[in-house]
Structure formats: structure tokens, C-alpha cells
Image (cartoon, rainbow, N blue to C red; front, side, top):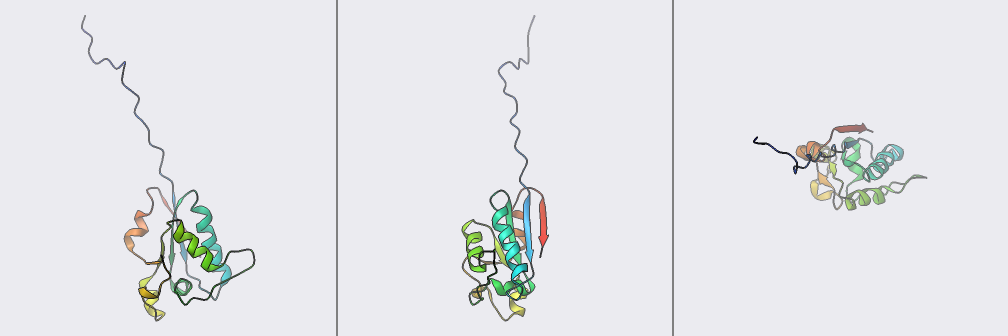
Length: 136
């Protein structure tokens, strides 16, 4: 009797954990609306502990991430400066719309340290899981 194909010493295939979902946070409000600006920035920090996160600011939002932006504050929230700095420190992409920067009379050189001009590839490549979007 001949035995072939013995699997006695084979290991079971290793299953990869499912990819974490990514959270894409879209912010349109700027310094003129502290709650609509600070809430999503705070959410990005909190979610960044467990998920892949990307933050995209357009319309008036770009005015919150330029070097001469006012420091936006509101009771119960860290300031806009603190939140943007924390996101950059965490390695979370913080991106500003280039067209909105131009419309506001600003340029990429005017952005805070660590804030980048939006790149369409980052919109899709910041996570390997599904992309969930939160709009403000």
C-alpha cells in the first residue's frame, strides 16, 4: 500500500484579520463656526486611536488650517491649533482643497506645518478597509 499526499505536518492557513474601516472626515466650516469645525477635528483625534482616518477641509474649512488662522476655541473642546497639531502628530492626513485655498487668496505655502494640499490618491489609499465618510 502506498500513501501519498500526507498532510500530517501541514499547518492550517493563517487567516488575516479583516482590514479596519477608514473614516474620511470632510469639514466645510471654518473659524466662523467653532462647533462645526472643532467637533469633527475632535472626532478625528478620537477615532484615530482605533481606525485609519483622513481629514479633508474645503470651502471655509481651509481658513482654519493656514498659518495666520485664528485659534478657534469653544468650551468643552481643545482649540483648533491643539487638534490640528495632534492629528499631524498622530500621522493622520490633514488635507486642504487646493481650489478652495486659491479662492481664499491663499497658497500651499500658507498651510500650517504638517497640513498638505489634498491629493486624490490619499482619498482612497489611507485605509485598506471600507471608507466611511462623515460630513460637517
